[in-house]
Length: 428
Ligand code: HEM
Image (cartoon, rainbow, N blue to C red; front, side, top):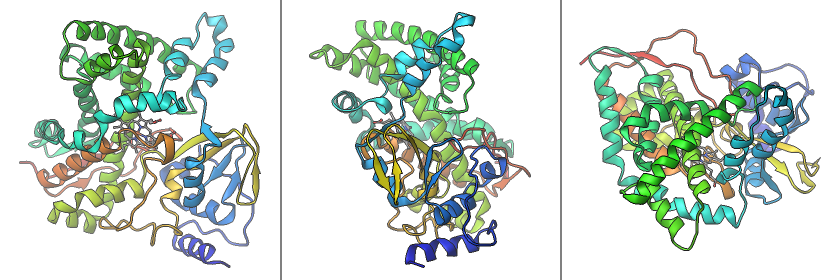
């Protein structure tokens, strides 16, 4: 047995779900509720038994860090073409006189589905607003929102971290960056919420049809806002995108609308899961929570470890555009490959004691924000939001305890997040 196999076997042995007997093919089912509750023993098992695995739907499943990273960096793999998949569903909606054209049209301009040169052009236009130095300057505003949200519950002695902090925070931050006026904020939050599951392969035809209606209303409202900003520019991202559009036609109006919607669709649920999964991990590891409470300055490495330990996005999809061989298996052009970031982040070949939560872990090159061309645009922002939210909860709410017996996870096979995270604490 080679070194990596040894490491994998060690991790499997230390887990709860060691299976007896020699390696045998098994059916990996990401829809299984046991898997949803704790995917990590299954990842270890697949990585050990069949690291390049073909699932029962015919897609390839990758769980090794090296394979996941290589695919994300390899131009022979493209993002899954959601806009085309949406268009392909149109015939099934014809009888109801509905279609998914608006959803397919706007999402086709999303960075996630673009390749250079369009990807390069759009990403460079928004990239500056999300650069670490610009985001650092947003710390006081983010702290203000967190303080306000915690202030609302501080005297109560209990809260749901998801609905009362993790969800409103990213919505408010993105709205502020874009310059969404107060009067339409709650409507925009509702639309953004409806769109936040767009990446979930489990969506029904009805929910896609609903999103199509949402995106039409959302774009109408944003178009009015763009018209207002054209007349009277402000210090916000919409105004700077308009300026970029006016300068040598670098950007079309539809691209501005699509970008705004993309930021809501990608920035909300992911950040909710960072704060939710991160707080859950701390509540389940009181020694680590105590350490962070005593030494809040370790928050940067703590958030990196929380992102690694229970990653907000577990799996993302790619399509091979050429035949490629991985681990002795032939992936044929056109086939889907699901790269499990959550599994890569627990690979013992990359991380020592991968199932341990170690807030001061060094050399933590996790893949929670992916890698390559589509590396997360909002990584710096998510990090700062996570750092401020988690440190503030620990510093301001003494004696934090989990207040639920059975946790409920969202039924989403790509994102990993809790429906609610009720806690108690000593009131102020
Ligand atoms: C902890 C929170 C977050 C996590 C874990 C996360 C993770 C990711 C991942 C894995 C990807 C790659 C998707 C793929 O290649 O298929 C991605 C892309 C992206 N993310 Fe995030 N994200 C987070 C927060 C945010 C925020 C706050 C924003 C913006 C407000 C954002 C905006 C984007 C955009 C625009 C892309 C597409 C980039 C491109 O294609 O060039 N993300 N994110």
